[in-house]
Length: 81
Image 1 (cartoon, rainbow, N blue to C red):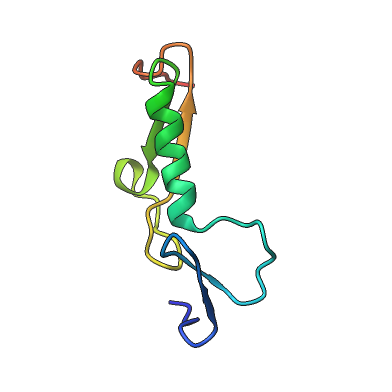
Image 2: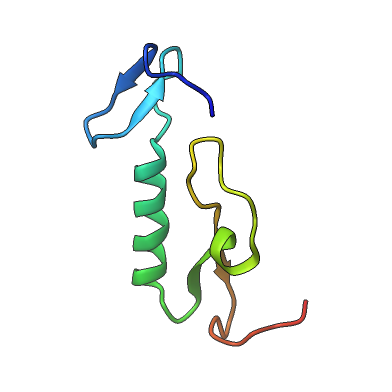
């Protein structure tokens, strides 16, 4: 794992980013919250998929699940494509 504990910036939301990351970037916690809110507010067409749990995709360097958002006319339907 990448050890950035001595060289991090604490964010207001409790997340951390390595020093030197330009202003305006979001923490992983903020991004996950955004995706979940987007899916919740548009549940008829949007769904968050945890690729690590569902397909065995390896986690990030920090050990987080890899997430994706599915957008489809019938989001609950499993599609072959």
